[in-house]
Length: 215
Ligand SMILES: Cc1ncc(COP(=O)(O)OP(=O)(O)O)c(N)n1
Ligand SMILES: Cc1nc(C(=O)O)sc1CCOP(=O)(O)O
Ligand SMILES: [Mg+2]
Image 1 (cartoon, rainbow, N blue to C red):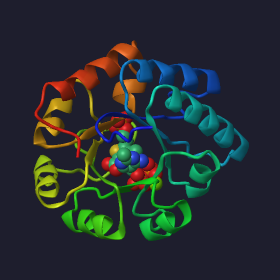
Image 2: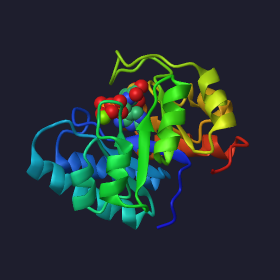
Image 3: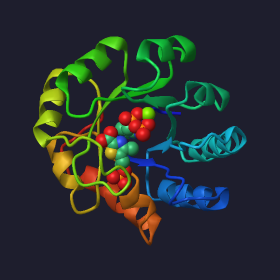
Image 4: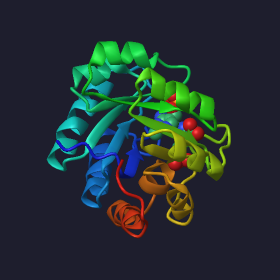
């Protein structure tokens, strides 16, 4: 697989996509529309369901040459041979995840609106920096807000791709892309849309219209 940290980064949601068939068909539609990265985000404690769904998503993402990232759980990431893991400030330390998962796995880090957190994540070996929340989010309304200027500051000083997250839709995505985001991470604006494939295609086309090149 060619690692492509650029473009549309869809994140699954167990309320919007409650059963495995719905999940798989929604993700396949997004992949057909050009989604380049998928994060499996399921906060349940149902280990069997999580392993089953993550394994199926790994196979599907491979078919479309897309990356599968697992949220929070480095053990599940290892079990399904995922391309990477996403870690927040309350999750496993980046250095420990690197030690467990090896050099070739993508590690993403939530840095909210903080340059010092982004700098620390870079020093600890993260592969991308996630900043947000940029807009009101139906999924995570209480996530701390972030400013567009933080994207500019991080992209000028830290040589890692930037993922923008939080309330991103087709109407506002170009604001974060023009500020320098390499990927837009989207839950509601993608997986709650009526035509997921078409929505994914429109998100993907926004990247072609900017000067933003893959890092
Ligand atoms: C791409 C991306 N960015 C940020 C987050 C949020 O991570 P975290 O703060 O650990 O919160 P949870 O998603 O675990 O609730 C993310 N998952 N993905
Ligand atoms: C999971 C998550 N993390 C955020 C952060 O700011 O760190 S915002 C968020 C929810 C993103 O979903 P939607 O696209 O529906 O707003
Ligand atoms: Mg987390």
